[in-house]
Length: 159
Image 1: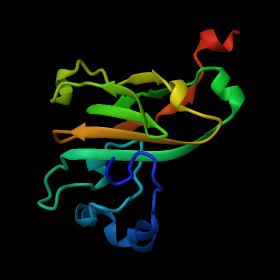
Image 2: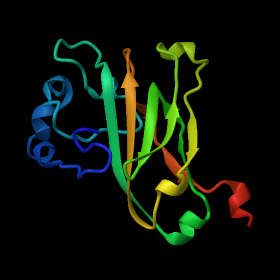
Image 3: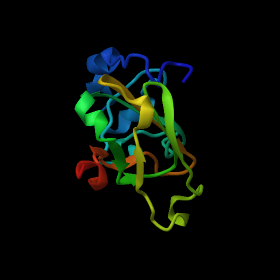
């Protein structure tokens, strides 16, 4: 939040210039104050993101993307669904918190409930929208491990 993670620009200049230097094992040395690309179908530690001591990364993870929505799409009350997500999380649209998700500290204590579904609500607008997800990772596995998607609930689509 303090560094523009919610709605400020995502600057990938450093990543684009140096990404080949941070493949695999070297990703643990990536500067903490820079954005980098990450997959959304594989939890963050499996992508090589670790603490400098080579232990699993713990702390906050941020995901950001911009999504264009039309007025017609917004009229259908769209939702976002995260089918595979570890950790306590907050989801923001255009810098405004849309929802919070609580999980027990150890992921295996959550009855393998990794899905999260929430409406975009009033925070979304026609045009470009900044989507931000903050994950609080206290343990050895963090972030997304299945890609999220937008959809319109069947009750809205039937109108």
